[in-house]
Image 1: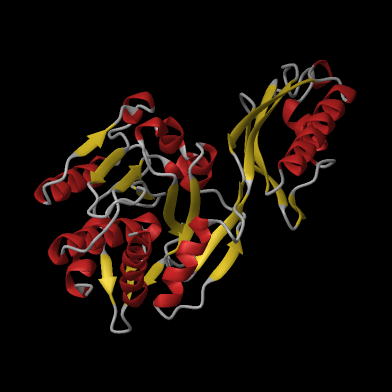
Image 2: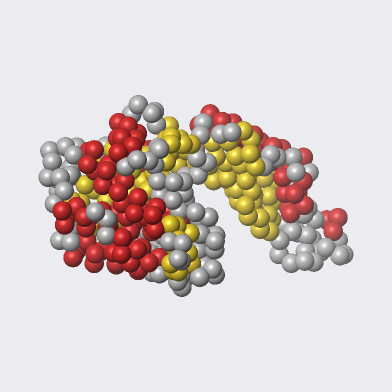
Length: 371
């Protein structure tokens, strides 16, 4: 049923269109043209304007042929860096890679290609289906920014699937963490580093002393924290008057997230003030946790579809976020599905053609279960 040649061509066309976060217009324009040729209308919101990007989120609707509740599928259009000038290479082993100096972009263009092929098959074969909604978001890699700006009141679906997990097709992610973005600020006092260092308070040094007292990495099986960026100072011969650290904390338990965040904040402020500086901690809650129950229909439907295809489905927990987190937070029960992309966010990224084909078959099987 799947037109493999067409699918691979679609995937390569998509990954070779630059669409790093905030600059998704190439993929957005391609999708508008594709769906218009299918006789479908594409709605674009103003997320691009708000984020000062080049495209908003796209929503496509297909009227149902079966009197069943609507169903939503979602994927994101943006990629991480290095994501410019991607050239896809199809190997004799049926693996698609980049030339090696960029990512491939299967995160998340494998999902987009699979959705487009599924739509083509539905139309060609006139397959019965419930009302379908397809959401393509922007700036997912920047903290699910596009999804957080989308008005979910525009949707009718109460069950949804995001295709954005790097495990095998048949993997159904039912647990994922909530996350806080944390900025730590140290205010010291500037002075000449050679003539009057004792008159200054070095904010970088204070930050280092505080960080040494704080946990970093895995806290337990559900909880992690990290310090990712540190910036500060004016010149090598000036006692640094200010230092900024950007980090995060995640947990599949909201209680544990609150606990580790408060501990980080309190320790940081206490240590900085003890050393004579001033401290400030800014906390931004990025997205809620996902905690689906195995017996829920959104999970059972995906399990039935996977089993029909001969897959051995797996219910999984992950430490990463996805648009599924935001969709669930909007009151739509949403599972994240494995698509088979490997080594994502690296220049060693790849995906197999067989997994791409299975992604399409899984989408169609879920739609069949829903009809």
